[in-house]
Image 1: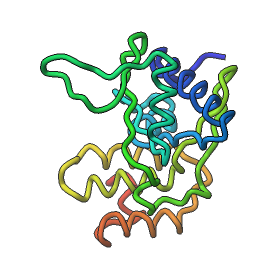
Image 2: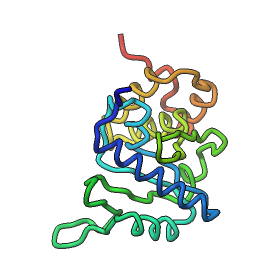
Image 3: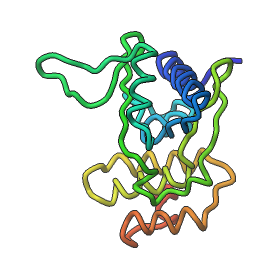
Length: 185
């Protein structure tokens, strides 16, 4: 079966699955994939990302595991010191929080996605991801997020639309709702 994802992204998913499995074996809850990496996963590559944003309450344990799997912190003049990069992947991994959407995301909706022959990863629920994108769009600082939210909405089946509408309204201070995900006529 042919993959929908670009090889670089697929390799990063496999690396994250191996890291998640190693953490789980040690009794440590694996990180949750959020942000652009989750968007690329859910849109099957229709939207690409340059990094994997992760949420974990155990950042130190995750960072030890990243190092054990070949990740390094970027260094040198002009290099941002946030996150980790794997020399073979050239895709950054960064911890962006210790609680899913600062506690606003529903941990019961987290999806566990099997990554063939490598293990599985935890991924933010599509509904929470769409609401997060809409919140960024509503802030005025990220106009492209509306397109991502609409792509996720269009490509996703079986969404809890009542929950999602409530989350969008929360993230956008009641400015937007599910009706704003429909393509304009």
